[in-house]
Image: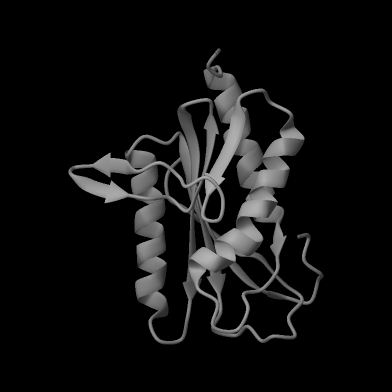
Length: 169
């Protein structure tokens, strides 16, 4: 079992950033919660993308599949929604959140905080996938990345907004 080199990890982070930024997702169903949405939409998309990389030992864990491993930081247990690992090495984590009318600021700050903490707790990079449900309607064929928030050199949050383009997954 060989670990990835630093250059390979940096290339994977760059590719993941490009992948997330260019993704179009199916919109959430009415009253759907983040774990169900992650299982139905985001996990299959990430899994298919990682499989297409054809890198031995690279695998995905997430809500609806193999559960991500618990991260402990300062006696606080953290559970990323999706992780990309190379054998046992924790490479990339994802946090999936919805912005809703009742508390969009709270959801946004929680998503950013969790995304940031996963990197600090040992992942090489972390990505927030934040779906803005405030203006979403059921006729929207997809949501796509509209805003990028750079958290660190290796971690970003992307806010997905309604689009009239069809979903890629």
